[in-house]
Length: 218
Image (cartoon, rainbow, N blue to C red; front, top):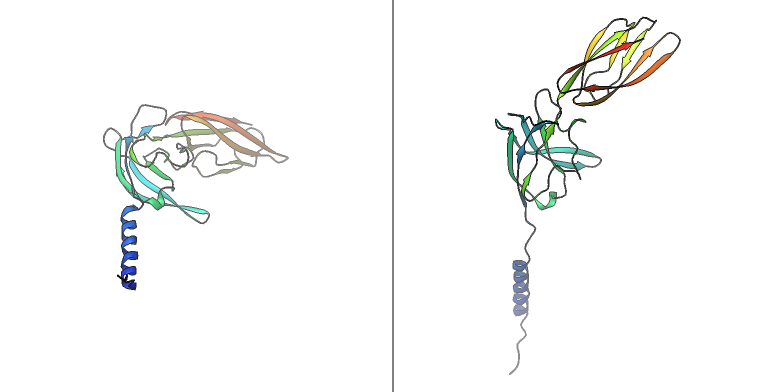
């Protein structure tokens, strides 16, 4: 009996093979994550209630990075927060972070916030626990006590968020700056005299939300 080799039969066989292979190979799935924890004041057991917490994915565009807020919530009366979210497979390597905001505290994006390990605060997938911390502002009171000729005083930004201070012909001025709380703060300032310019770098300890007095004599 002669075997019939029809082109339509060949075509149907090829299509059936692709259908079977497609059903066996499963595509990449989204990564489901359950994230929860409590927001604390740094170096203390004090939790922060009603704070804003943003779930952020960092997208890289050329040499710059941009935030994509995936979700936002507020902590409850005991500082608790939670997120349930999916990350598509294509974004699995993008850093994901929590950005927290609370009055009189530095956000986690400021230099005083906790630095993430490996580009993220938590791992993707499954049930994750993470307790972020925020550093409170400390208020530094500066008092100038100048008895020698000085025609200008300048103080640079350091870890604080204050605008650079410039005072012409200072003598007994006082001012207040907002700095990183509960840590050593390096404040650099310049005393400009008629015959020279003196550069002084000082380290000042500021506690949580307190006011530390620094007297600068010259």
